[in-house]
Length: 454
Image (tube, rainbow, N blue to C red; front, side):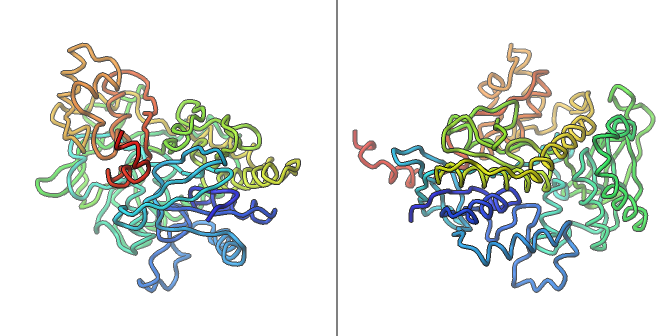
């Protein structure tokens, strides 16, 4: 069924955009890979689990209720379990190509006059010795298990890395009955203090997390990092150590923390695959947009984490602005201003930039990686193999990939790209991929059957 606007991604940005555009009289189709709307931030447990108080797992639950109820009462067409792998430009606009259901074998198409990308972000995890042991999960993975499955990854956990996500993960696990042995944050308090003015609006939220950590007696180790995960067939403990002012491990500060779970994370990166395949300009790692959230490709808007990691509140503001703008252009009218959303976006972007500057991974993290540490899990490429490629003359991610196959696996370098760049001593760059996810050859053959016969 043709639609005026296809919104890809049903997280905060996508929900806000779909509701704003639909309220202004355009036909909107909201497409998402999950079984339910909400994205990672508002991830919901399956109805069959019978969650009595799902709001206990969430931040800003009332905002989610307003979005959910608005979606139920409105005219937005919602397509869940649709895994978008490509957006194709056509004479009439665009065609969104997706794979259906958990098996992702049957294709589906959504023709649209315009597209709004709210594709979110994904976790950045920097490798360290032992990070592939069972029991080591990403910080977001631990949160997803808790929110979506009402399960915890273990009984005694260490939460380590850097970034704001570590706080809700540690407090969420503690509230669910997990003994959190430590929250290990590589950034120091001084970094946050240097950005105090920009982060002033975050003080109440930060104080709330601090109170919960104190209530659950979670030790907080700032300017520390996870050095090694221990175990044979599964995780049994983690060695952590203090960092000096240059970001190097301080000898003699190592301590062993017994645990059966390590939730590790080092921030987020934007999902830009669909934007790049459409030819949208990407500034660094984020999709570049104007004041209306328009990309440089006519008919394509972007909002939320895809345009820069900034959290749910910023995603909501950007989505609302993008939805209003897209609706106006589709109807041939002048976009009506959204002063509150514009003001909120400016303030929240300033805050996001401050958080990004404060929560940077340790400068010398790559020095702690031993040669036998797996870097690319898909292709089982070790740090030693990457370093050997460097000795052969490789100086960037692409050359390392050609010499070692690092980044050629299922995830196409999403997980290992930053690590390879760190070992190579070059700045990481977003990889250009023709498809946003793996696609069965049979589906590709059915897209253009005549071309396969030529």
